Length: 397
Ligand code: SAH
Image (cartoon, rainbow, N blue to C red; front, top):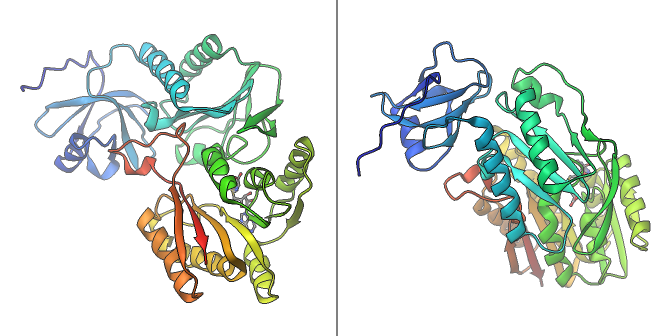
């Protein structure tokens, strides 16, 4: 079929190399700076037409003058009106959640590229919304206004907060900005995941407040959990509070005192007694394992160890060490829930690391569930980077 002609209506044009064009033809949505042939005079954050080296149009994109990802596609057609595209995409993202989200009033409403809105994250915590802007193109007052008005109209939240990650702004060469309320006045609420309740403070905690991507894994892990449980890297107690439905004794470990304070308030909110320990998980696991401490269920949910490809080896060693210690401490018929949120660690790498740890510890592992991020964090088949979370639930004998 002949490609229809595309009129970019005066948009600036970015020319990409053959390699860049091929990537787009395979369905990916990024072009790296090294694959840009010409972007003369294109302003930071501009809406641009994208063409290949023979000037054949490939679609419309958002441009960044700072990121290694110079071009993020938003359409394979010409886009006349960015604001109405934004509205349509927000509407579609909300409708998608209506189909895939159950048993919760907290979930991700917009997941950047995976919702065809590159650079925008919106999370819902009951009646509060929290948004994050990650790119130059999304960082304009006009865009914020459209987002706020559309979200307000469709979801009627009590307030909308913008959470700023200074590191992201620096990398995108955006001027410093403070976190603030974009709409409404309310800054704290209570939300529930699978019937378990959590406190939310709009301007506290990591990310936008919670690790919502683990919501379905909490419920899955709880199905198999039994006996004495240890939740390592517990943050606000997401796994611990779900395991408490089946485990008589639970300990949560994290190095962040503020996180554990919230975890403790969450335990009270749910009428649970959980022991929280502030410690470096590596030290604690080593000491406990050497002391012969035993558990029936252990959760490992560390932060991303591999922030880039270059420290993959160190990251894999970290995962191996954690899994070795956990396997040493699990009683026969134990349950290991082991996670990795590093995109650079592939599911195959992760399974291999855990398998090596099992071999070293002479334990047999059966995969009860091989899981990923909750469905409100969609995965685009053509964009491997959108799949990052791995969660193995294993029966240990
Ligand atoms: N399981 C949590 C999310 C964990 S995020 C949930 O489902 O909500 C990773 C957590 O690891 C953070 O809370 C961070 O404070 C903690 N952390 C980072 N490095 C650590 C270390 N060396 N020892 C213990 N905790 C650590």
